[in-house]
Image (cartoon, rainbow, N blue to C red; front, side, top):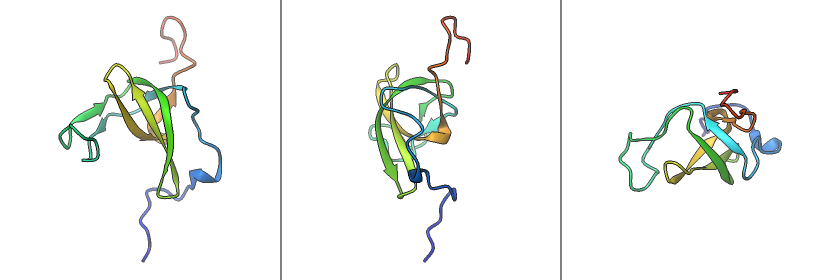
Length: 98
């Protein structure tokens, strides 16, 4: 039986792209796939552009890093892949870099 993967890249061969406490921004809307308690399937958990901080780093399918991002303005932590995030630390005082 072959495992179906959404990428041939094995992120775990290298270090995590983001660090604990790093400020990150969501690159896309993220909906509940049924794994987030207290929300209905399909509810938007994170909107594109939302900012949070990496609170946890785990792995998934022995292939990907999963970043538990604390979206403090929403009041919860959401697990996201690196391709769904970008660093928000280069943002200037007036919001340049968005």
